Length: 443
Image 1 (cartoon, rainbow, N blue to C red):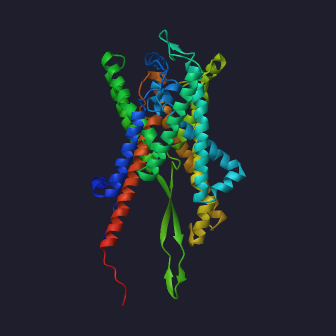
Image 2 (cartoon, rainbow, N blue to C red):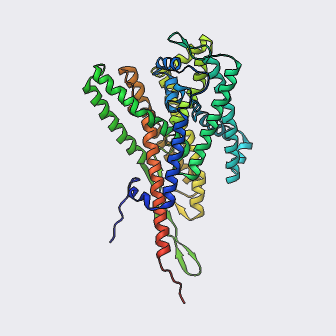
């Protein structure tokens, strides 16, 4: 009897160059990411780069530093892509929340492909509005900032504010377009890959700083080795949890079709992942915290800056709010992508049932109970991994995110992209076999 071995998401990647369409998609994705990285180094007019660099050197370990990580370092240089993709993510969160409470938006969402296009269009409009608001807040806040005895803005005034708002809004709109193009014409999720490329671009610099601290004696070599072991362990743990799933047995009843021919009767399984939401919860949670606090940091009022300081990484309040936000978005996003009632209804339509569970409402209730327990485990796992850098930075002043949000995003996006490439390869190999096969009907 022939056996079928399970393949990992990275199996078969040696055949990437053999399929022209896949090669063109990969090259297009790489080209778009290169364009994004080039734009992350084009500065916004009217800024003193030395004063800005001195200012962000004082903001390491704060929420501005985390925002700078998601923008790929563009915020610390105040480039045309300084806002990054965070306004788009914030707009997506707002639209998804409104869809759950506004009947009109819920009806649009149920219109299929047309409804999805309308929701995407509203998301784009919201992105522009949020970009204008954030761009004006950043421009207004930078005018009053000084570092090292130098003013960050060379010539303050409405000319600088309007130019900055126009530049940053255009940059975010362009990034949004790049992400959509990657999703449609490339490989992988474009928005996730943009965040991924920004984080990966900063990892060598952060690693070099850690090694420099080890050479100067600020960090002991044994401690650096321990951090390396922790990072490898966290990576392996993330891969294990991202691939973990609960398989629910589904049995299909036999039914008679086309006269006396019987079909069905086979048994299969319904896979439910422990972390159904993937890397979305930490990204959403970060954007929710970053948006108001970033504006408060640039505001001229001391009371807002004091409130923002209480939410800075390393504080107990930030850890609690961040963990609660991750747990909330794990349940929220899982409820969006998986509907137990719809799944149970589809199983009943095709004659499927869970052994020992009545079809319909009881099946939906059973799936919902299992999914709730799995999501709770997944939420605790994601929150624990994302809070790891908080402990390292607060306790040991580690200047590198070993594990945590960045590692979760890097590993998750890498696995998702590799799985999409593997699926593309399998589909193309199947099509090639069908084209070469000689299928003849009965005469």
